[in-house]
Length: 231
Image (cartoon, rainbow, N blue to C red):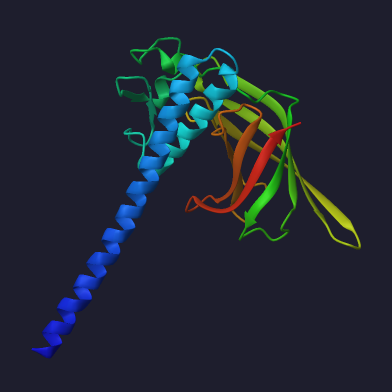
């Protein structure tokens, strides 16, 4: 009997802990939603600074999607707007509006271009051998094929830089990858045999910034993060 009472008590404690965690997540989500609504109202009511406000709304929208999902399956594009609609990523930028609001044909201008350069500073790094303080990314080529217009093929160079009190060191790599228009995501292949590739997602509401991750290709684990800014 005593053992049963102990078990019941443990279950009650665990249930309470789960409720607290769910409540805290709900509070966080409610705060994000309220902030999103305030920013949206600000954009609607004010012409001045509209571009910056729209960027803030877009960035917050990405955060909400990361927290609760956007309602679309993997490989789909969220059309947004008042009517939630999902279309295939393959149909994005194909010249035909598949979204009711035409959103899938409005994301076809890339923030990347041949000759552009970006510098990323370390946020955290749990996996790279060199532990660079910065990564300089240069887009060598950027090409969209006429028969596969939902993504572009990218050639890129990387310079990994580290420094200490005695010396600084830089190493260079060349890689290839793709830019997904509907995902707003650059993905590059591992330049070495360590299975670590670089991605950069334009999720800041600002085309001059992207969130970079070092990703293990086999598992898609994000094991390092860099904040990239266009130069």
